[in-house]
Image (cartoon, rainbow, N blue to C red; front, side, top):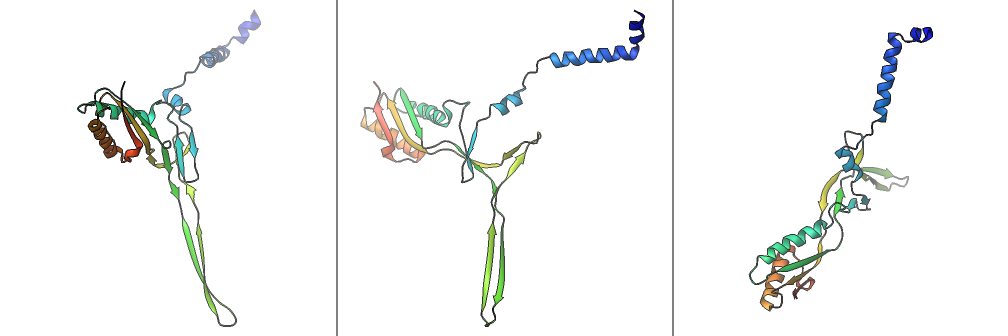
Length: 193
């Protein structure tokens, strides 16, 4: 017992208390913060040779096409004679992110003369392309996206209660052409059953 009393000095007790606190901190489970969840759930980017990245909209099942469909359905349903309506929009590709490129170029001109008195100009031109990166506060580098290109519309199908009427079909087709700038043969309007 005497040996224990000698070892239980104030310094040793403080060290033991700190070790206990350290063990408790280590044992507490750590929850991910919202920013960490967002970074781990970010969509996977696919780089292409043209300096663009395609992204898949994982968090939004309908994505861009679904948004267009909903907006077009509400617009067409408000038109006279159309009635209840369902819309399907098909896209030709996915959304593309255009990555900023730094393209420095150099040009050197050299004038050469040969021993026979002839002269010529030699032009050396050099151009390099590098991707511009942005570094966040954590030190992670990501390509700088200068703009995002939405995919173009491949076709639109409309199923409407008034779709059996030729005048209604023409009006719906003209509205879709005006909104999306697609040809009439890429739009199909039919009567709902």
